Image (spheres, one colour):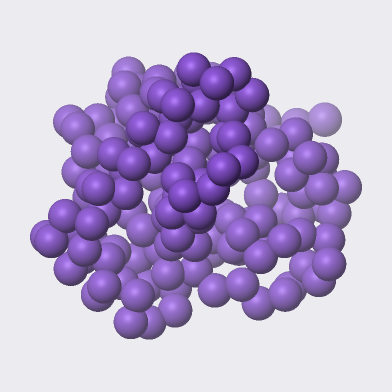
Amino acid sequence: MSRRFVIEAVLVAIYGQLLVPSRPVEYLLPYSTIQELYEMRDSDEPVMPDPQEDAHVKSKIGELIAFFEEPFNRKKLERALQVPWRKSPPFPISDNVTFIVVNTLENAQYGERFDPIETELVLLCMREQAPMLTDQFELEDKIIEAGVPVQLYDVEDFDFALEGGISEEDLQTP
């Protein structure tokens, strides 16, 4: 059985280990995070602090964009974008990795506390009962401070999360 995680598309470009997991993984990507890839690719702002790493990540972002622009994949995306919260058919990336793009809808449920993409990530986690993988400490802090009922894993803890992470029983044990 595959593990499911909500994640921003850019993290897949930054953290290559996410594409070579030891067991099957299904990544749920809000469509807005795919749109964000175009902005990152075209921006003069660095994605990574080190110039060599930045060039590498921008190259991976370009590859990810090209993947979603392939005619067959573009058709899958277009179908998902017709209705809010519709999931695309699976995009198999490898034997162990599948992407599913979700046409998420930001509804200002969390007001000014979260930006629109953060809100979409949180709502997708709640809707799909899937944990979030992130590398943003600020987002992790905001989610914890707001008491949002989602499970979070830092990307650095990916292997732990992949192996099952923290169960519902673990969360309820004092």
